[in-house]
Image 1 (cartoon, rainbow, N blue to C red):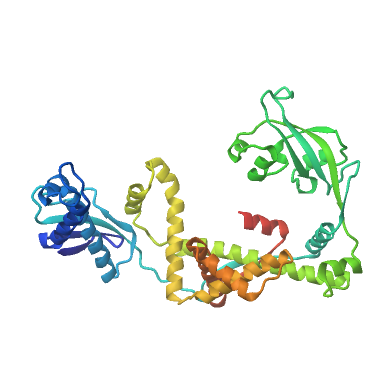
Image 2 (image 1 turned 180 degrees about the vertical axis):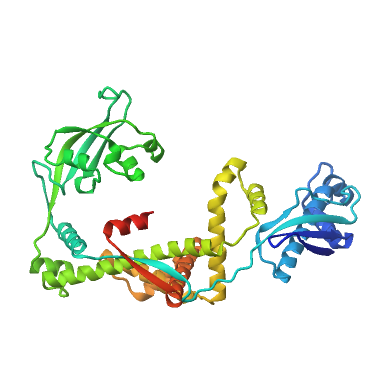
Length: 448
């Protein structure tokens, strides 16, 4: 066997493989013997079909299968031995200058395309600066959170007239262009939280309303999240995109949560002996919010860093090869139109993945099995603690190991921990420009 690599350019190469009969004959003969053992044909006992008949009927397909096995094993070994960094997998050339005779097998020649990974070096030092967005945890935000906590431990009442923070039980009926009930239209029951409605006009319609009162609303003004609006109206996400009708909203009930009084009984119930005054609760609430939004800041930083470093390094890819490879390996046919639409996002994701892997190798980041176990234990402990169900460490260990036995779950955990290490690495080595945003600015940044 002879394998020759021809580099077309920095990102594309060709493997030319010449096979001699000695490279595949033994494997073909063994495959025929194995096939003979289980072959069943009329007139012959199982396992006693003549080899000549097996060769006559199945010899060509067995030959093709074994030669393909030889090729795949040889290509894989050649790539590993020569430490060639490839993208996708080797692909038979479209204009394959194949040489060989399947009827009278002898020497064969095959050609394969390779898509090569670009050479990368990632510099992370003080000359590299990246923005880091932080939430301004101001008094307004702290007050809102304290109010929400107090309401969480408050009591429910049934007022006669709605106010800003009330929740409405509603019937929805779709209307036609004349404002009449649409025949065959949408009918649903759902709840509406007045305080979360962004549209001022719609919110104003629902403040001061009573049971059995009705108003006409554009459903898109009730909730800008299409998934949540679909659930509210009992339709699909797809249908929401095409929904243009107005709806008659009839209030069937009004619910109000009256906040608990911030007194000693409340502090003991919520915080135990840790908090004894409203001022201490304020300090604790501010600290908790800062921790919570710090996680969001890190999430945002990882996302922005990936985009920024990818654009700066701009690694080139063998785009033509990758597009052909996607079409060849996809389970369903992929049209050129679909490929043109989806390839840019695939390319961006792949380029970041190459950079991320290079950072891990170059800066020797390591996530050990015990790191993964401890992370899952912390997540599980926090989850069960929120239900008031503390769990022994030994039981947590067993649960974490079971969770990590799932390959998909393990990959998610390891990816997360590598990303955490990368954030620490960038923060320590690069120039970080902190930018403080107010609540609305920060939420908009995270969601977009």
